[in-house]
Length: 288
Image 1 (tube, rainbow, N blue to C red):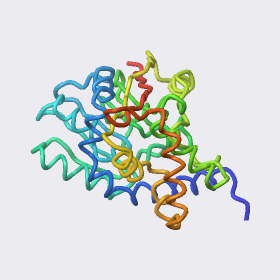
Image 2 (tube, helix red, strand yellow):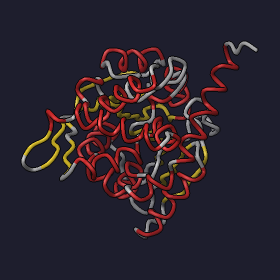
Image 3 (spheres, rainbow, N blue to C red):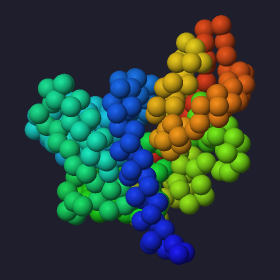
Image 4 (tube, helix red, strand yellow):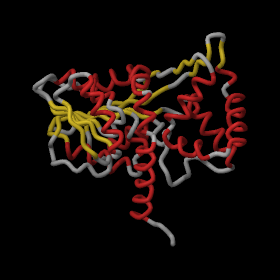
């Protein structure tokens, strides 16, 4: 049977939903690391979206909830933050982290980027850190974000920049694709670099009729003491790759690991691995 149009999008979305549910445990384990590494990105998101005391904030594709938890401190006890993700296992992680911080102004919901089941004009701020690039239709997702924003409301999103400027992940995709003899992720599935052109990202917001669009770069380097530590963490967190890597036979895993070790050799220093990295961060408003 040939899958076309909306059926293809639905199939892709189901695949992604299952994928993120499967890696929730790993994200829980490494949540503090992800927040620490992405602190400059989160700060830029908050600067662009400017959550104020009493504001209502929605974080989409929240994962373990790093950006939304930071926003909860900004809006204070009179504000309200909703941490949302397509995977209930992810929102459960975010809820536990909010509770551990004693944040009583945080709740969780299961929401899809492209079909946000929330009323019109329900939020002052929408945040999305490293999620929009996985949307099958990012323009539709941006339109949904605009719909749930109140007039004058603000949105800020972060996605990964160009593949070649993020070798900490790009080289892993290169190695897996070469090992399997086919592109990973496949052409029909959006991947971490699907919005890696700042002009494309800006155009997504423009197409959704958001205004005052700004977009720029944030440096996100990655450092690890050893190859083994980096590979263990990357294998656990690289969403589109995690289940694929787990399914490889032991001999294939050894061959792939050796291939990756060779590819990352240029980033090996006396202090361990040191990779450059860059995120794109964009902000916009719904017209007042």
